[in-house]
Length: 78
Image (tube, rainbow, N blue to C red; front, side):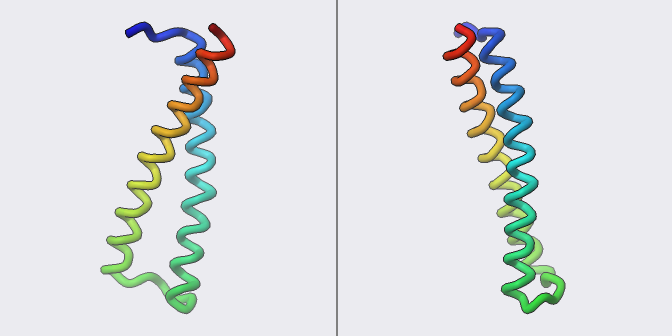
């Protein structure tokens, strides 16, 4: 398997965009959880579930954006 330089650069840029996107999504999910809880602090059992959801969202977000960045970089850069 060949790893092209434009593809690797695209993956890096895609990963950076994915991290920014994750920050926005995390903020929205936390606000929704607080709103659903009546504005109170999230309970311990809910916090553990929310933490798991945030980890899954982070991994999926990074993989998708890095893959899209690699594909775009390889397509544009050759």
